[in-house]
Image 1 (tube, rainbow, N blue to C red):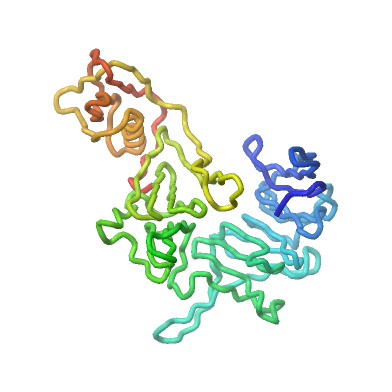
Image 2 (tube, rainbow, N blue to C red):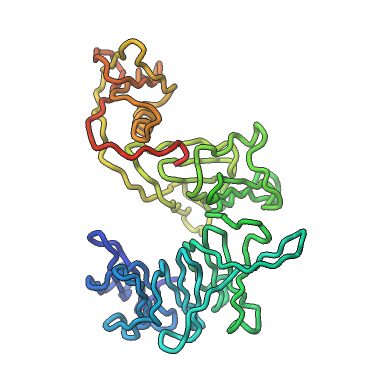
Length: 398
């Protein structure tokens, strides 16, 4: 919704190597009055949507959950609960915590209530056997889900689960609705939804945990992924984890994991791959919208990224000549692509080398070698690796 004057927002923001409690009162469209509590090291914070003075904070020092009813001036423990990664309060007054251990809800408050685990029910298709289990590794809690004041959705490594708001006995019913139906292992991470090439279709691509990405070309009815030449290659370089992201009402799809950024202009078919150099790791993207539209992208996409200082010296109009038998051909690349390919491979132990050369736009070949001798060559660019502490090698899949 729209932030109005006197709206109050808050959260745990990373300051000086730790999470610190921040609460802001909106003054106008461009300014807010911030209250920072440096003595409250927090991992996550929830603000009651009905009462801005009512907060739940997961303390990052002792991992205990605390409640405040005076806007953070004083706190008291919340029934001794420990280990929450995220917290939430819905509009009906229920509290939720999520962590590796599962989702727990509290309908009675921090003084008289109790924390109860919510569970998913699995019914075997062939035998009819019933098994109740507490899904784990939760990563997000979303209130107001589906437009219902008591609606809540929970994202985890096992999939998306929802509170059953249609049940008349929600006070005692702890069973979750699985947003992934009867999948034997709900491990969806983050889906991309893009406009398909056929009428009235949407293409879906999603990253999975303990699996590679999968794709559907018929609105999620079937999941053949990449099987034909027209589909393009599967994202075999992706590995487990990461996420895929749609770009509003468009045919574009992005899948991002660590240093890998995959882009498709066909909703998930025929992905291209960009390897971010210098040990960078890219996070979830956001796209700018066209003026007057809430869904159509303008073409600008932003994503957070962390990157170490570049470890290569760039020397223009110079070609490094590898010694006999030392050359490792990395294929045709742009200048920056050559540096990216050499750097990411050396850092992760795919190959060894301390110098690379890109022979210019007319050749475009990229070669890596142990050292080599420099010589002048117009248009060529050489990259010489500077010494720095070695990284722990990882596999191609990250």
